[in-house]
Image (cartoon, rainbow, N blue to C red; front, side, top):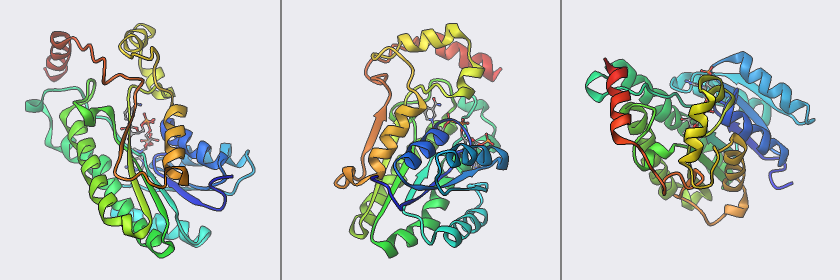
Amino acid sequence: MELENKVALVTGAGSGIGQAIALRLAEAGAHIIVNDLDAQSAKKTVAILNGQDACNMAIQADISDPEAVGSMVAEGVKRFKTIDILVNNAGIGGASIMVADLPPEAWDQAMAVNLKGAFNCCQAVIPLMQQCGWGKIVNIASLAASRMSKLGGADYTAAKYGLVGLSHHLAFELATHGINVNVICPGATLTPLVESKTTEGFRTEVAAQIPLNRWVTPEDIAEAALFLASDRAAMITGVVLGVDGGQLLGIASDYKEDLKRRTETSA
Ligand code: NAP
């Protein structure tokens, strides 16, 4: 198995895309440290993983808190000795409101989780990877970082652009240590949470805007994450990989309708 004996920390792996990534990396032989803000959902993912007879652990931690991240990494190292793969997946969406109405606290929170959270995890894990002379960092940004978020706010978009910028610096700095750093930008991805919050009509409308004619699945993202976490991608670093079914190519956004929704949410 291509990730046999590797240890992967996946943040926000209690649900959605993070859970799918954790499952896929485990299938490829990695031991998974499943992080989530919610202890129960982290444990649930580990229960699914352990059904695959692997050796995994759940750690509750708020990635926006550097101390909590430090303790999480120390706990993981105590159990597995090192961390070879870091997937910065945890993220929060921002409301689809006008910049003029965006509460500063919402801006801070989006930055704290989506950008500083990844920074905190990188700072804590990179020394371990440097010791081994091997490491893979996969950052989950968004299609928003190629243009702007259709459903989220500027806080989300700016944080995801920031994550791409951070990844470029890390890829440059860490290449000599045998560490690859890459970004995945998911397009509209149908997680159980997205499914529970949307109508069938909306889902059909979105699918129609995607050239490959369907929503991205969490498993599509997990497949890309596995590739970037493996030595099949040994010579790939600093790359931003869109997994969006061609959504960016065929953006057929209705400007007036989008603006109306944003204005109404702001009001
Ligand atoms: P999700 O289902 O909400 O999963 C995100 C997970 O991150 C949740 O389990 C959440 O825990 C956890 N989390 C939130 N804040 C955290 C924190 N401070 N510390 C640790 N864990 C935290 O979202 P998703 O759709 O799978 O998204 C995963 C990633 O893909 C995100 O970075 C998102 O921006 C990105 N993305 C998603 C889409 C999409 O269409 N779904 C598109 C583009 C990019 P709680 O539930 O307990 O809060």
